[in-house]
Length: 355
Image (cartoon, rainbow, N blue to C red; front, side, top):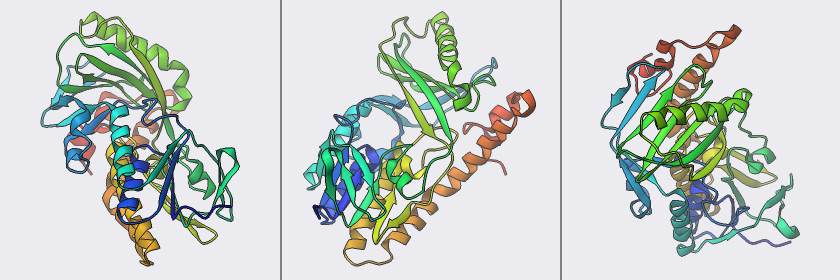
């Protein structure tokens, strides 16, 4: 049994890396582990981040690959709608994650890849791959949508969208994210996100419709090919589950050891857009600081983390969850959402923000 470290961070995506950095900067001894072989691989997102994220993370500028200025939304076969002043970047997600890990290491965190979590016991003893047993003073779960850390404390994401994405050549220069809303894309949407000379093209749906993902993506690809917007080559594949059930209570304990959640593990992904990188970065920084403050004697730091996280994210997440449920209710009895319902369910339209 090894008492090291003060704080064990499980997962080295943006949330875990930012947590490791913040905690190490505050003087805590930090071990951060990830079951993957390297940072950011495989990439399982569309790689869009809002421009304001650059104010929080210095690592953003070197990994930005495409400037975004607007959002174009197409509802069924209606004419597309442009939302300008929607600034952001398409990033190289693998490079972004690697830069965040490097920052954590520079701050003094011990970051290790190829180290899987095996169990977290009710006694708070953590067993890692190879039978290594640790007794950290605090545990941070930043281990994704189906977080084993969250499972250990009874906090699990209950609703998901399943996604499928390909990388394709981009034949026309483009500075907007394209969103495709249609009743047949149940509980989700299609997207084309430009990334220089290529683009991320994908579709997300409710798990019950997962078998139709390939057909839906093929149909969207065929349309864009016919329009001459993309090339025929498929340069890469990815996909995965996105939690869309709303925010979880991020603070619990096993024995006397606090267990804290951040990022996707805390249900911070937007239930409508699926966006989660900014929330992961912000919550990671907050949870790392909170854990370090608690270890330094601030007894209220953990409750403050939960309160601050709710203040920052819950109103937007609750609105998105309400809109998502409205859309899903439209399918009851074999019906389908109308164009008006699809607009009300998407962030680009004023109906979304109405009471």
